[in-house]
Image (cartoon, rainbow, N blue to C red; front, side):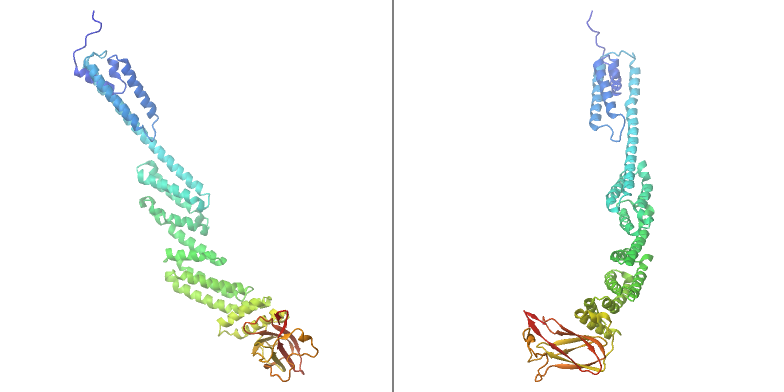
Length: 505
């Protein structure tokens, strides 16, 4: 008896059936040839592929695994063809039936691939929806933070929306992006809905940049949604800063005029600053004239700065700035009076002297000059500042002031009458030493043979305060005297200089 059945005659139809059955991935061709090891290899390879591929996810099956599996199927088909060429089938006995069965079973890998492709597409959709949800949560978290901190979160969420809309335009997630953007805009601009206009400016400016990265067909009317709101926020925030006396309003109004020059909000800028100027000008006559003057000076500077880029509003702003400048200059007088009455004589002197210089035709100029003199006297003799100097002049009592000093001197006096004059230096006079002042009989201006520079003035009765101060760069300490004048007497004031231990008086 032979040890094995003789090989069957070559049969290409049978070989083709075996090859097709092996292409199913189940190794059925080897099953019909009764070859268990190749059958097990095919089944194991398919099982490994299923473990790798299932459940389907967005990333799909690794390309290397697919290539290796395809090579294995091709190798099994080629090997099966050669094996089936001379080997009889165990079942079915008829070759055509095996061939038809092989062709039919090709639906297994083809159908599996189609099913897996559909499952993978669904996994991709779910992954994209998850990305959309994460972006939504990022927006929600950012809404509870200040905008400076939340800006990066808003940018990241916007990048996700853009990627979905541009690179996954046919997905279910992309279809939801327009609605998400509406929520995004209202969330970012939440401060505006709460009427917190200053806090709303930065978010609304940010939203105006969104069309630079997001397709316009995704935005629709949102592309211009922030404009009206930003214009309103810039005006309201600027108006609040103007009313509060801050400086940020210049930037807000400047941005408004530059960004929305033709808007209704921009048209309200000039009336707003005009009202602020009038309010400050009125406050000059109130309890804090110096604060009002400072506000007017600042307002003038700020308006000139704002007018540089104001466009159509430039003329109006310039006019208000000019009026603020004039109101501030005129208000210096009330400020100086207040400082004098508060005992701040040094500042009152400075304010009044500036007023006299800046307002040569003002009706209060003469009295301002008198107040400046009185304030200077009061710095040496505080009692002189008890009453505000008037513009009164003259009187019935003669007072002669002589200069027994080697320096030119300015004589300041205040009381019922306020004024000043200058006496030239006494050419033959010199400073007295402290020792000479102790000599019996020594008397300033007492040398009858000396021609002292002098001037006689007429003053009314009452207390007059005198201060003699050297002119030029002398470091001598001013002299002072308090004279109580009465009718029936002739009075003489003498200015002289003494030196002691390096000091001059």
